[in-house]
Image (cartoon, rainbow, N blue to C red; front, side):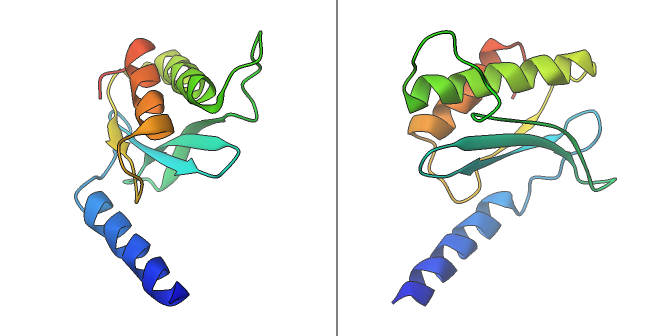
Length: 117
C-alpha cells in the first residue's frame, strides 16, 4: 500500500510541475513542507542553479509564532532576498501539496514582500 501512495504523490508533483520552468528573471519558487519546518527556494531551471533559499529554521521570530505565521514570514524573507537580486516576478511551484495552509501562507508572504506570482 505504501508504494501506491508514494506513486500517487509523485504523479501529482509531476503533473503540477510539468509546465513550470523558471528563468533567471522569473525563477521557479519551489516549496517543501515537513511536519515541523517549511522550505522555499528560487530556482533558475535554464542554468540549473538555486538563486536563493529560505526556511523556517533560519527565520528568527520576535515572539512565539505558530507554523502558519512562520510560513508567511518565510515568504516575506524570500521575497526580500529576491528583491535584493532585482527579481520582481516568480512562478510558484506548490509541488504535490495542495494550495492550503502553510503553502498558501508562503505564497501570500511572497506577495506581501512585493513579489509578483
